[in-house]
Image 1 (cartoon, rainbow, N blue to C red):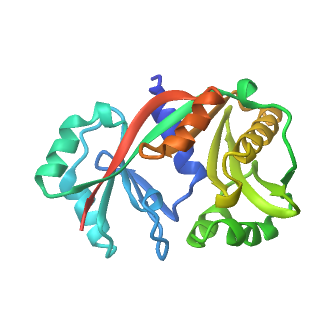
Image 2: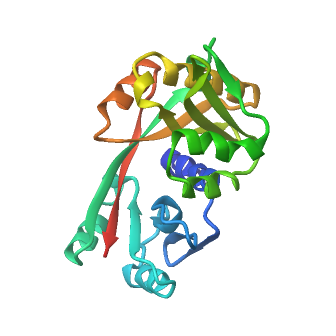
Image 3: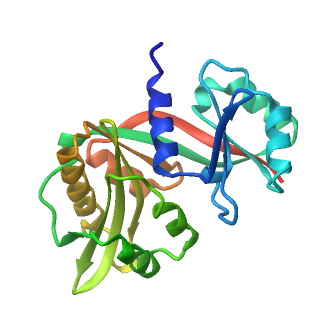
Length: 238
């Protein structure tokens, strides 16, 4: 049976941002990563065509000592689930958009952007640009082919992005630009370099997540040809 496009994207995103424990049951893709407090690797995603059990997902996370976190995706297809979670007191958090673009439309010449081939150097790059060090624990588990691109300005790190390829799709993650270098084309250069590499790895489509309340990033991605696939948000029971 053909899978909906949103599920192909979410399935690849789940593999590209890997949780330690992953299983499908009770209508959910269940994800748990001990000691890492990120939502994506510690949340449940409703499976397409299933009727997910709220009681089952609550047992799963509470048995592991975690707050219950549901990724309501796509939000427009799960209004009943969203309403049921809201009625149980789950708060809504981090509305996010999934954007896609043809890889060929984004690939191009880039400025001073380096592919950091030695994966042992990745924590050093992350430490310089992103203080969420728990992210590195996830990034280091992303399966190949994956690449980290770092941009420099004046001899110093100015921005970065991670691109992970999976069966014709390439996910773009961890796009960061140092505050003093924003609006100077750094992120655009990183995107262009990452897309060119992904195209060489056989990726036809790029996808990424951007929070709704980030107008600067949304404007950049629109200029580079990204359009909306679907939206999601989290429901969290504290």
